[in-house]
Amino acid sequence: MSSVVLASQSQSSLPTQDVHVKVSPELKWDETHRYTFPTIQNALDHAPEPVHGGRLYIEIAPGTYRERIYVSQLRPRTTLLGMGSDPSKVVITSDENPHTAGSTFFTETAEVLAPDFQADNVTFENFAGPTGPALAISVTADRAIFKHCRFLGFQDTLFANYGRQYYVDSYISGAVDFIFGNATAVFDRSEIHLTRAGYVTAQSRVSDNQTTGFVILRSRITTDDLQGRTFSLGRPWRDHARVVVIHTYLPDNVDPKGWSDWGRDPRNVFYGEGDNSGPGAGISNRFLWIHQLKQTDMAGYEPERFLAGDDHWNPSAEADKLP
Image 1 (cartoon, rainbow, N blue to C red):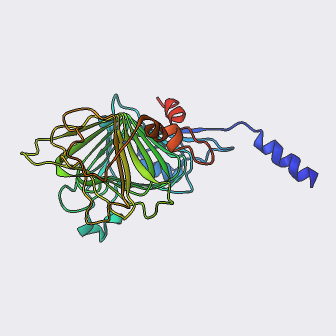
Image 2 (image 1 turned 90 degrees about the horizontal axis):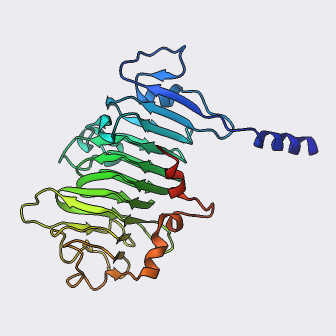
Image 3 (image 1 turned 180 degrees about the vertical axis):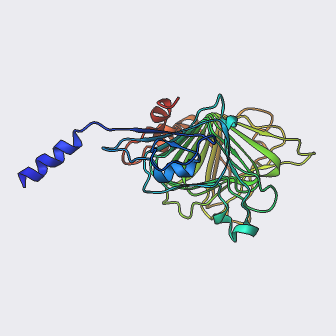
């Protein structure tokens, strides 16, 4: 028994070994070369495995990658690094839509299932347009970080489905329910942009016992010209939806009521606002069931607290390690 313990201790003390691979559309597939790939999915499928808890870094050259990618649970600790000067230089794009795919949940350009996934300086796009729900990305992964990323779509752009997720210094655009799902997610220092009048969020918490919800924090909500129409900060996809918007700029064309109950019992829904700015931040015409948060309440929605979990994850510290 003691020899097994010693072996285990010896393994755990070994240094982590990261793996760095490169992706470029100018490369050709060569199965004998394990560190350069022509597509992102090639790299995900064939890159060497890091050892002792190391991380796989996929360094993506500038270009438009017309592919759909799948980050399996068998690829934990994967980081996509866009090597362009800004996220618009590395674009992962497709135009799958529910008419061709058969379901909303088969339309995603990128599907992420791997825990501890990271992406930096990358654009995820679904350019199907107003053809119904068409996802740029689906994230069903715990401890996911997206930094300096863009998410472009129309309806259901970003499916924050499950796990703790941190989006920082990013850009998300769409028109209808374009941030949706039941993850525990914080959108920090980001721009959330509506291309038409619609709904920003459709959160789907099913019980007050769930710790899930969306926090829009220190961000800006912007719009195209909505031609005199207004938009809503959210509507509840499920009965106990939870969304909080704090320290965020709101434009003048937000609906004065702020939110929609979408036919749900508003006593079960938790929509909160606090310390927002801009011409749309006034609360005098908000629904009475919207929670107006105090400073002490808002502190609990900082990413270090809202996303901490039992393992005391600090997403801000992890994001700071990215370029």
